[in-house]
Length: 369
Image (cartoon, rainbow, N blue to C red):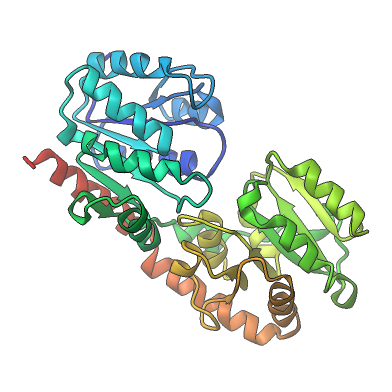
């Protein structure tokens, strides 16, 4: 192995928000003249193949789940051989493995950076583990103000060990994209399209979304499209059949044309229980798609009620239905919200600032603590 400027470590490289963020980050850092390699605690995965296609070296620890501690020794060997200038890990298991593996080979903790991109509400023990192990790294990075606040309050990480690097997107290709033909999705030309994008997971509030959509489907000729894959698809499909909504709720599966879907949608809905900084919401903003989302960390970092979208309490099916109905009926108001959201995404959440912040943080980490 050759010495590299940056060794990125991630829990897995399956298709998802954080692995795709890492793919974009590696590209950006290489454009800044920094060499990079990537380690997956699991297999290479589809994002690993994308990275290799870009000429990036990808190492796999072949871990078999979060409790496979063999990955620590495997990661330690990679660190020892590569001797990277910095280690930057992402996601809980990769953060923990990087701290322990670096210690095992006497790699300086001052050159280990760990990143968290979610507000943890389900596995509170993650916060306790971060509290007792954060000394194994120089900084803990959060991608939104909500993540930083959560880590300071509930993991009790000292403020001087936390760094905010605001997430972002490149709005240009999204704004220039053409909408997909709705008929290709099985939607009628005269119907309205409500869109959700993400991983089919319990924290995404999808059962609430489906129940709320039942309140408006008949009166608006609207169709709900769910784009993504995940472990609760069968459960959601049973719910749809039970509510007799199969004619107007469509499971699109994993898609590679999300931007075209966003440009075709009349409303984008993200009813999550928790987020860190939802990339799907940022993309919807850039696409000028009118938005309904929940008043939870991550989402409220992005959307201001009645300025860049509509914000409702999590779990309130009536409020979610009312907000969606409002945007479907008042198209002028919806268009104004979408236009403002697109402007905010382009100016305040642009990857240019994100990548500049990473470079500045890497420079800071190279300096003596």
